Image 1 (spheres, rainbow, N blue to C red):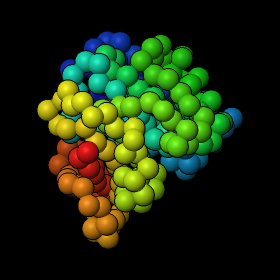
Image 2: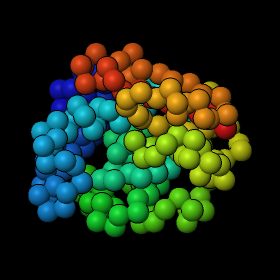
Image 3: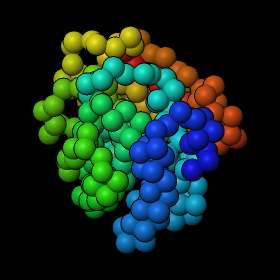
Length: 206
């Protein structure tokens, strides 16, 4: 939990309680349904929660902003962002039902009221959002093609509507295949921990 407070020192007590609860709930659920690598569960806060919150360093959405989290798995980045922005809406989608089950149970237990869930794929989602967020789901150009009809045409934030995804590794070839405006931000710009030296936040404007 100290990793979160280090970079986000102004959290409310409710947010602190919710983030603290994740440290108990994810290991408990992971024993029943594996949503995080068993070898990585001890790094929950750094590798999963704080990584998700890189998006909260990139944008400060106005109240009412809508997000779709594509390929949320056990709830990343959607659940940490929903805690951070209680006045924004989040729709979390994953093809694997048992992962959605875990994310739903955890969101319910910590009292999140700004999240909805869908077991399925993006092609079945009829919602429109200001931003689609994702974490290492698929190749960037494929993702851009898939989400176009789900991005709202009405901008209400300083950063125009689009895709925000978290990726790692060498991204040159992926970025080169995207024809829309792309911004690549090293997450090490936000977080000094060694883990983030090979992680990037990619924003594609729609």
